[in-house]
Length: 133
Image (tube, rainbow, N blue to C red; front, side, top):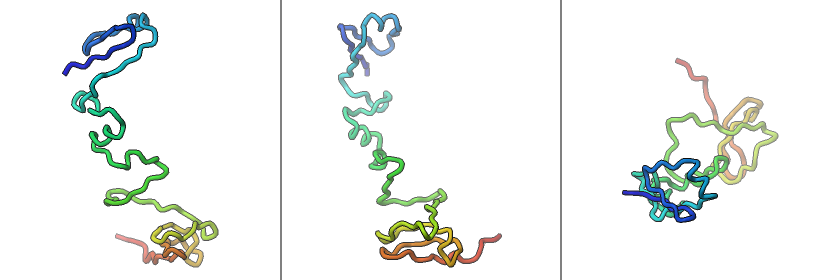
């Protein structure tokens, strides 16, 4: 498939044609438009807008989430170590909603523990013995 781009002043450059800086300087500030979306096989997305492009590339809703506000609503987290947010007892967040997990540096009679919220309170998770080989 041939791809061409039209720029202001009626110049048309086809794919494979060398365009030098000197030639572009004659144009002033060009406005480039592509009449047909570029296919994925040619390095494009085959789409005319961002939403369709994400769909064409197989990206789900996580592709539009900010790195500091990711919501996982299904699937499985595996193959990685998960680090819980760490708090002292004096600074734990609200226990609502239920199901949250945190690491509390002094939450089990002064000892470190994992805690799970029941929606009203943080509950200590018994950590057990130290692992050994």
